[in-house]
Image (tube, rainbow, N blue to C red; front, side):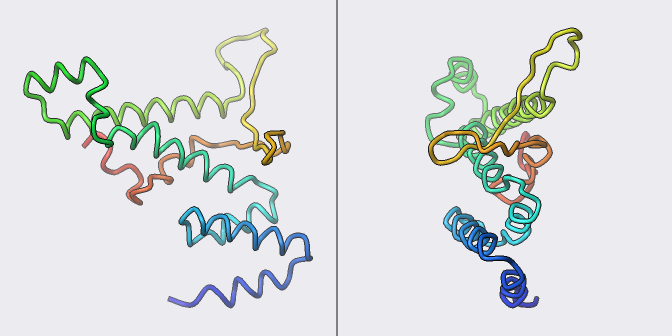
Length: 167
């Protein structure tokens, strides 16, 4: 495998000062988040003005909280139905796999609806929505986070693209 550093440096050197600073800042932020192979995301954000860092943070947060949060000790114990199933002899690991799979499907369906921007089954209603990146102060940047449902599976922190869900 070749060292990506020379290619990265060559790409950086071809940028104007503001874009170079933005790229270096993004690389530091992605690195702080534990993502070391972020070059494609950085290039996309800098050159295409797509909010890749915001996408990464949102999708990773959904995996850690809504999906993988069910692996935390005691998480099943807060659900009366799970308590009953466990008392009846159900395998705890099977229940964890089940609730993680259901959580994944719920998150995916929610992101799909958000990506749609409106209810396609309702005509004559002029209401919709958009998911947008915000700055540190919470104000919208104007950059839309679209296609979130498309990338959810690839954001599996285990690196297995959801292969263990429900199995």
